[in-house]
Amino acid sequence: MTGQARIRVILLGFLLGAVTGCGGSSEGGGQSAAAPTVYVIKFPHVVAAATPKGQMAQRFKELAEERFPGRVRIEVYPSAQLMEDTESIEALAFGEVQMIATSVALFDRLTPKLQLFDLPFLFPDLAAVERFQKSPEGNALLTALTEHGILGLQYWHNGMKQFSGPRPIIEPADARGLKFRVMESDITQAQIEAIGGNPQKMAFGEVYQALQTGTVDAQENTWSNIYSSKFYEVQPYMTESNHGYIGYYVAVNAEFWQSLPDDLRAGLTATLDEVTQWGNARSEAINLESKQHIIESGRTQLTVLTPEQLAVWQQAMSPVWDEYRDRIGADLVDAALAAAK
Ligand code: LMR
View 1 (cartoon, rainbow, N blue to C red):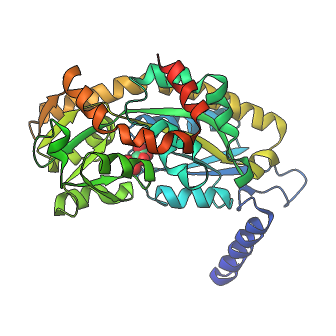
View 2 (view 1 turned 90 degrees about the vertical axis):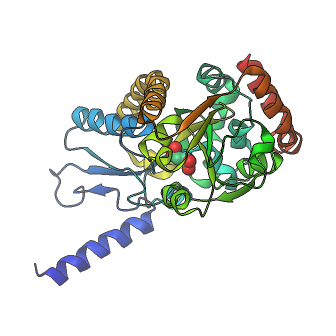
């Protein structure tokens, strides 16, 4: 086949895939009765391979391909190589990618409910988050997006958020006037507004450069993201505040998932459950390790807030609760509060 003919065949295949809604996600099935279908799962994410999410995505790929040789290929694209987060949600709904693990905050464009996880100081630690995620209410959220063609399968942890900036951020007044990069989500924006900062919504892949060039002054993220994306190299002050949670809604394109043979879907589901248990149990340690590396680098100065100082932050961010409680659903917030205790 000439190069041009080959490109035409590939393009045709892609278009047909798009028309069936499966996004070119299977190979080989139609060629001969004997050729097994290889289901291709494109799985983009935005963080480094060494982070909790990066490790879980890679392990899922390795175990799934080992258990279903020649039947599934999982293409993991870390570090926003394929696309940024907001684009990935759209791409998943349209079947252009088959799986994502995107921060829960970013699904606010589809449902207000998932903003629950970004209510400041709702969860004291990952154990509390997990109790809620495993509760009936937490579990029910996995099917909150089915009308958009998106099915949640699991929650993956990253960790708790910390602040960094060009000056020590010890009390809310220290944030006043600083430009903070936030995820592209309204509730994270509201939280920075509540403390008098100037929030700038921005894709993760742009943050390092924005901090380096001064397009933004400050940011909030987990230790593992701050370390693996080197934010600490361009932020002279860090504050351990644990004021919020970053975790992921691990979701598939529902139509693609239903199109899988039953045994493959069941096997991938079981593999994902296993990987989730493995990775969620390690995420805290990965974050602590990253924190340690940051401290040892000597590039930044860390302040750990006392319970009294944290109470001041909690009070300062309470308007976010007033604004979002009913939008999210008061029952859901109460269920999370009960699980968080
Ligand atoms: C962020 O944008 O800061 C996070 O959502 C990145 C991630 O995937 O952890």
